[in-house]
Image 1: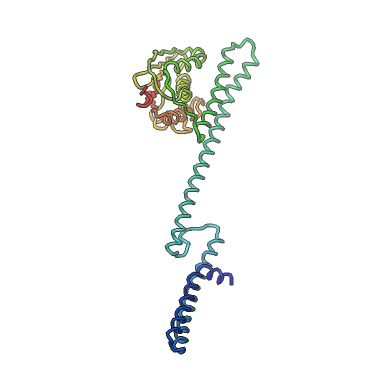
Image 2: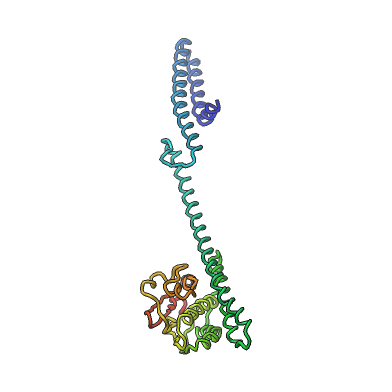
Length: 326
């Protein structure tokens, strides 16, 4: 009974129209004095056709209804299991399928992002334990130079800042403020910040004063330069050399450190990729260069690396025409 009610509800407009046609047919016949016998015969024939139509379409409807009820109660649904549908219903199915696939794609991306964050913070916790443990050891000793403790504290601050920058970079809004400034001032700020690490590893810094003036976001560009300088210090041996200089449209940060394997070069900017050096030295989060690449891309700049194993690495930031149009 429920199925009959559903059928009538779905096709009510069709049978209402048939009823109106039946009344019009008999009304016109009556007005034109058509024989009552003919009217009754024609009406019976018309009603027979309507009933036949009802039975045929109801049987099809019942088959479709039961098929869909079965599919509804099935755990796994395949679109191939759906019965043949009308063009309009098929269009609805296609729309729903498209929306479902989009939702699944977004859910998968969200799940992957969550996994990336989980992987990063798992590694981050292990990495930040190293300078914290070193601080504990130093605090238990007497006559430890303050500079050594400051170095470990600086490393902790850098790990914390990198985590915050990663969160900000992946947020929906980025607080970019474009302004004109001298690249020389920015580089000197970074060198001052990392002076302690230069001194501790006895690294020679060769910086050639730059007259380059650009338009960019000072805070985010400083973060990129800091990360590149930090990498140069990290992978350069004691008493090594780091050279920083500029050309008319690029900034170069070059070291004579351990270099990067050729097979790692294609993936160094991927999120979470640490490469051979990162795995061997256990000092890489796999996010530093990813963050740098993302920032420079958003600022309209280009970041590239050139490296030779045993000879060192050169990081190059190339500024676009807009950044140089000052």
